[in-house]
Image (cartoon, helix red, strand yellow):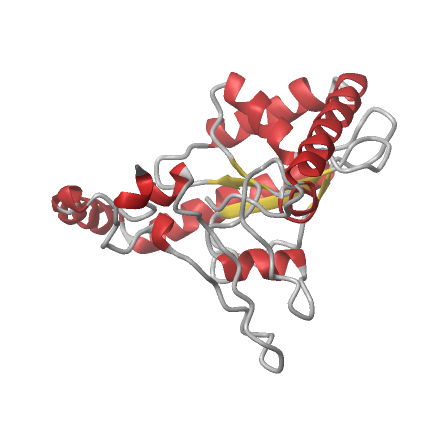
Length: 239
């Protein structure tokens, strides 16, 4: 029945291909993002235009606070968060996260991205971190980027390596390349208590459970390996 339907407007699910700007000599790659047969094709990644009236109220609120104050607020929170994550260690002294140098809001924005690492040096799959964070009522982003160009850059694809089918989280190779990052964002309403709660979550639910996390990571990768072998496809879900 889905084949009889047509989605005429532009939205996340209507994107059919992405061009890698670095691949100019070879034929342009055409990675499929959403098959018409999949439910993702009908998901909208754009805003709800019926709520555009709220834009005026949002702008007025930002003007009342002041952009300088907002920038200082976000910079202070993100700088403290990134610096603290960088100092976190497992009981054996191994570092918890791989994190780039903080360059300030002008280049980085208010999102702190890092790759969680187990105490034995293996990668801690980001979906595990997200799942445990949800149980604590903490919202973070993990995995690939909505912007395919950013995703390709993070995965460091070379020579047309972006010619892959976008299927789902079950595909192992994209999970290894794209499903590593944890992204914690701060905003205008974020307080120091919020970012401290996130650090407390890492210390209490992750760093205090190295054995449990290693077992969870093994189970996760075994499941993804099995699923990828069955599907025979390589890909990831945008979002």
